[in-house]
Length: 460
Image 1 (tube, helix red, strand yellow):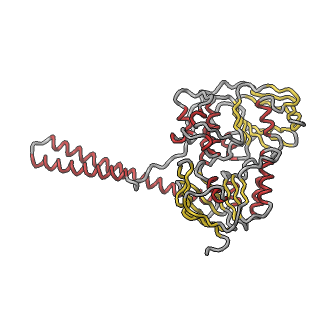
Image 2 (tube, rainbow, N blue to C red):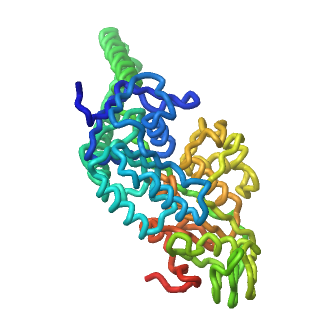
Image 3 (cartoon, one colour):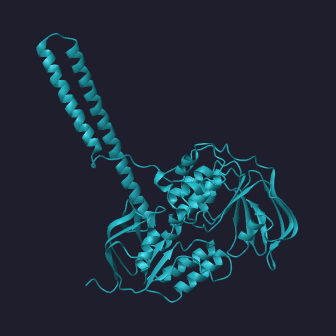
């Protein structure tokens, strides 16, 4: 009835753990029009891919899929060897090399270096005849490969006829129009309220300041009408049609007075060698000082993660002089484990925040009161990443090592975290391929890992 190349979702509704993700969503998609699937953490992007892949069933609604089983990438194959980036690329190769008609990709650029991200983009463009639905927080990548955007927000999935850049512009225009309408509504509400209060006060003064019975009766009538107007205004403000205040993105507004004293030299290696069964990095001469902001770059498999392990302790140290680390190091890993512990209990482990600031700190990272009693295992990958980063920053460690913190995070979360970490007074070491993140954090030193060594340069 609809042709052989049309995917149709009809009235799809889905809840997870009692949380409503989307209601009565109807969409169509056809081959040759790659789709970017975007939305904030926890809105149900991965859940929708699982539904499309047949791994989950919607609570209501139906799906017509003429394409058959999709080639579905969601995590690197754990049976492969190599770094996270190398395993991710090999898994993507296995997923795409069969020239599939239907492709579902969940964060495909996660773990990939710039070279492999560019290679993946070229590969997807060559497969443009297929139906592609791609989940990613890397908007630059999505703008390269997608010509259409599905945006999950407010329990619906909006279909935009353009890449994410176009969708963002459209949503920004919508939000600006909403904000203008809200501000006009508030001005009118304040005007009416002021007028009502002035009328009531005038009637009260007239009634109490005269003995003329006619004027007193008139004043009472005026006061009664003003009261009636006030009630109508109150009902209007409580109605569903009354515009609610637009939500501002969460931001980190807290001081960092709980941070330990930063040592002058955090870590130093002289003619060091790092590796496992054989040397991976040699002739390392590196010094990490208190307050340094370092960006670590390099191809997949070059030894970035091994270098971080050597910084945190004796892991992989084979030869040379290693001094430190001095002070506690907080490390954010690329993969975040799920636990059967509630969010607030998990967060409180080892934190040094002043009494009463734990809930506020979590709120700044986007966790509302309803999240606090949820199990960590029930959170999305992005929410777990935010939770771990919020806990690391609350422990008061003088040095933070973040291994690709942009993974899983939506743009609002990434922006909020950048605002907070810009004021972090300790030492910051970040492995990242995300230029905007690195520029925002003011990473002024680059350690480039390649061909068995580390080159140190200043970032202009």
